[in-house]
Amino acid sequence: MTDAIADPSRDLGVDAVVRPTHVNLALLALAVGGFAIGTTEFVTMGLLPEVAEGVGIDIPTAGHVVSAYAAGVVVGAPVLATLGSRMPRKRLLLWLMGAFAVANVLSAFADSYGLLMAARFLSGLPHGAYFGVGSLVAASLVPAHRRTWAVSMMITGLTVANIVGVPVTTRIGQAYGWQWPYAAVGVIALLTVLAVWRWVPFCPPDGGVSMASELSALKRPQVWLALGIGTVGFGGMFATFSYISPTMTELGGFGRATIPLILALYGVGMTVGALLSGPVSRIGLLRAINGSLVTIAVMLFLFGPAVKASMATALAAVFLLGLLPSVLVPMLQTRLMDVAHEGQALAAALNHSTLNIANALGAWLGSIVLSAGLGYEWPSRVGGILAVAGIGIAVWSALLQRSSRRTQQAQPA
Image (cartoon, rainbow, N blue to C red; front, top):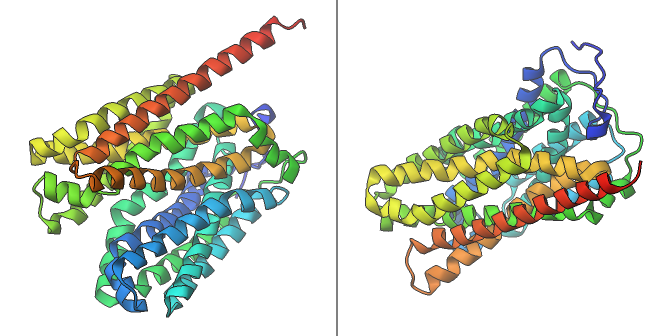
C-alpha cells in the first residue's frame, strides 16, 4: 500500500510520513471529507423554509441554525486542533470525521429547535480542525514546491460540494424532508472515514509538538497578519455572496427559478479557482497573495455594474466571484503553515475560523448599506473596500518579513 519514503523537509514543519504509492487517492480521501463539510455547511441556507416549518419556528429564527454551525466552526477549530496536537494526524482525522458523521445524523433526528441548534453546533466543531490537520497531511504527501497544489486538491472537495452536493441535497430536502440531507452527509462522512483509513498513510505526531507549542503560534505577528488577510479579504466576498439571490433578481433581472443554476455557476468558479491556486503560487506566495487580493478588489468594485449591464456580464461576474477568492484560500493556508512554525495545526485550523468570522462580518456590513437604502450594487462596493484593506495587511506582512530577513542577515554568524 505504501512506500517507505520519509519526508525530508523537517524545516518546513511537515511531519515525517510514509508517502503513499498513490498520492492522488490519499488526496481524494481528504477531499471527500471536504465535500461532506461543504454540503452540510451550505445546504441549510437553501432549506430554511422547510427547516422552519419542520421544527415550528419562523424563517428569521431558522437563520440562527446557520449561525449555530458557524459558531461551532469558530470554537472547534482552535480547541480540537490544540487538544489533538499529540495525536497521530491520521487518527485525529478519523476521529474528527467520525464525530462529524454522528453530529449530522443527530441533526437529521432533531425534532425541536433546541435540539437542532445543538446538533448543528456539534456538526460545526470538527470543520476547521479537519481542514487544518488535513491540509498539513496533504502538504506532507508531496515535495515542498507542490504543497499549495496538494492543499488546493483537498479544498476542491468543498468547492465541488457547491456544484453537486448542495443542489442535489437541497432538492432531496425539498422533496422528501429537510432531515434527509443531513442523513446523507452522515453517510458521506462515514465513507470518508473508510477512505482515509484505507488510503491516507500513517502520520506520526511531531515529537516536539504539544499544546504549548501549538499555542505558541499565537505569539507570532505573521500568523495574526495572515489571519487578518483572511478575515478582511474574504469579508468582502461574503458581503456580496450573502445577498447574491436578491442582487441577481433585483439588479440583474433574473427569475427566481434561475438562482440554483447561478449558485452552481458560482461553485464551478470556486472549483476552477482551487485548481489554479497551485500554479499561481509558483510566482511566490506573498506576491501571489497580493496579486489575488488586487484582482478580488477590482472584481468586487465592478460586480454591481457588471450585473446591471447584461445577463452575460452578470453571469461572468458570478463565476469570477467564485473563482478569485478560491485561488487565495490554499495560498493563505500554506502561508499560515509557513509562519506558524511549531503551531501549524492550530494556525491552519484558525484559517477556517477566520473565514466564518469573515462570513458574519461581510453579511453584517452588507446589511447595513442595504438597510440604509443604498441598493444591491452597494454590498459589493463595501466588499471592494474590505479587499483593499486586505491588500494593506498583506503589504504590511511582506514588509515585516523583509525587515526580519535584513535583521537576520545583519547579525554576525
